[in-house]
Image 1 (spheres, one colour):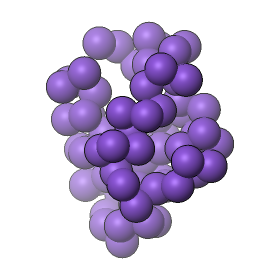
Image 2: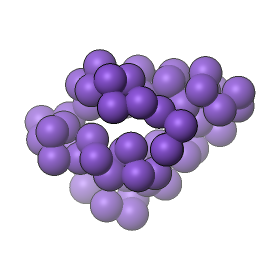
Image 3: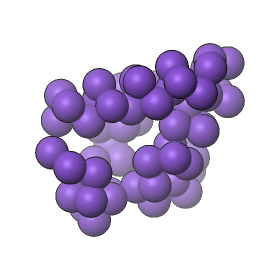
Image 4: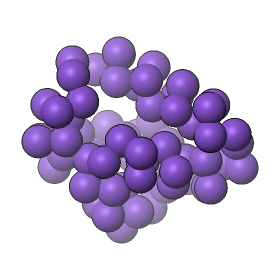
Length: 65
């Protein structure tokens, strides 16, 4: 699935993002509005991981949708 589809249907996918990254709040996930970089940034900050690792996690999540 390409990211444009995820971003365009964020209300559908935000619950799946919350399930994947349970430390993120509903508000944080909503504020990302499907923006890939913003989502990766939230994951990086919340989990204290490197930017590259956060981006890798987002890519893996995307590929499993």
